[in-house]
Every structure is written in C-alpha cells, then in structure tokens.
Image 1 (spheres, rainbow, N blue to C red):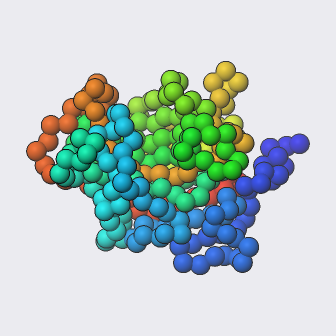
Image 2: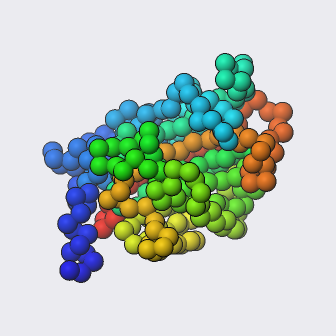
Length: 269
C-alpha cells in the first residue's frame, strides 16, 4: 500500500472545512479530527477553545492561570502576564493559557504570534496531551510538540518534542537562529505533524525537521491525539540557565496571537 493510500485510511483524515462562523458541510462536527479549522482570534470562540482558570502547574511555573489574562482586541488575542496579590499558593503572578476543546490528529498547525521579550518569560504555541489532557483514544502519557520563545533572546526560536514521556526525561530542544527579533512584529509559524516526521516552519520556510525512529520515536496519533495550546508563563529562578532571570519592574507583559488554522495532513498547503 502506498503512502497516500495508507493516509486515506486513517480515521482523522478527511476533506471537510470549518470556519469560525460556518461549517462547510452538515457532517463536519468541529469536535471531529476530520475537520479543518480557521480562527482569526479576533474574538473568543467557545466552540473551539477554553481558557485555563484557577490553578497552577507547579514547578517550574511561577504563575497561576486566569481566564482574565486572555483578551481579544484589534483582530488578535493577547495573553498578559501580570503581577497580582499573593495567592494562597504563594504565587504573585497570573497569566493565560488558551486550550483547544478538541484533540487533533496529523496535520499542519499554523499561528501568527509576537512573543514577550523579557528574561524569565516564555511565550509558546504547542500541541499537548498527558494524564489530565486525554480523550478516549489516548494512552494518557505525555506527548508534546513545541514552539517556544525564551524572553531573554527573542532572536531565537526553540522547538522541541516529547514522546510518551511522563517524566520529561527525553527532550529534543533545538534552538533556531532567526534573522529578526520575533517580539517586534507578527511572523508566521507552522508545525507539521505527520506519521513519519515533524517539521517546523518560520514565515513559510522550513527551519527544522525530525524523522520517526524506532529508537527515538516521534509522537504518534495512534497513541494520542493532541490538543492545541498557547500560553505565557513565568519561569522559576531555578531554571534561569534556560530562560534567564526575571528581574523586571514592569507589572504586566503581553504576547499577541492571530490567525490560527489547522489542516489535516493530506490537505496541507
């Protein structure tokens, strides 16, 4: 069986189209991994997204999640890290995490974003599943594919992935040198997740790729489909060698996002 024939038999590959306002056909349910999605992120679409609210992730995150940290204005979404009164868990900052309601299979995941250029702060766009983010077909283990910006140098992009790794032991962090400061303007970023490879693109140019390997596999949709997430978080000083030390006197910082889309793998353009 050739590659295209094999893809056509996967349950999450189809030809239907979703927009934030209409469905392209009556059989395309937005919670089905068979549908394409497009969202300008100019307003909150509760059918597609949820906002993390009222909890913290623990180390190395130094903020709680609050739905109030996510706002929509000027045809874009803004996630704001801000100083607040000390919470019962001892955290002085709140921030936001946007989470897709559905889980996705193989495909192309696109976003335009403008990260925060402040040491100790991470701005991200990523695919994720784990023990607490799983659907009925998931193996319940940690699988993740990342785009991250470390605020101490937004001329760099970090890409990464984990496969069935609840202990976060086998990361594949790679730094990509950009010819621009990503915090100054919107740029286009893409993750392509396929059965045999992962690719990362910046402004439609391939900047990194990895291939599936029996000794070092990439995440598999048969193990777990993945949620789409974006977040901004304050890092612990204990990992300052990675993200830098947060020392700013500013009371709030914002990353901006717009024009999210998903296309199943054999619809990617």
